[in-house]
Image (cartoon, rainbow, N blue to C red; front, side, top):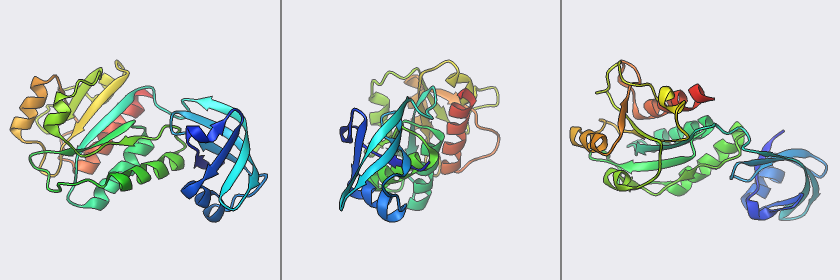
Length: 237
């Protein structure tokens, strides 16, 4: 069944209603009609098998038949912080793919070697929503505001592990998947074009970050983000 987003406030007991942009996608794009069965997700980890009972001009209403908790979600909670890229389409691609893989939060990062000084948060949040539905997830990743690396380091978030992928890491360093087997939450740090500066790496290590190894080849930012996310999440699924 096709997946559609229905925020928690639009779900009451065993009924739901879909309006606004998602209604347009439901009726005008996907051509759903009364009697059709669909999956709806609330973006908070819940999914529902449902049937459309009524389609009006601006909203659709239906009945929930069955619910699922933590539907198609990984066991480990991963936040990925990535240096924003000069080419916007590459960061778009990154957001889509790490959402499909299962991250919970995406932090656009401002670093010493970051070229852009702004972030298209609204656009990336919409891309994350589309990727959540396409991949059959039930949790909508939150795309945070543009954050400096120093501010990220100063945060007191209770991650089990904070890891940084960097070419300095030797083959003897841990793979992200090894750490994921021991954790419930992980912060994963990926640098921009040109990587992190030496000073930034030292700051991270002094703040408790661990270097992780992604292989001998130098990877582009978007590739490193996808590889690191895959090793962290899929090795723990």
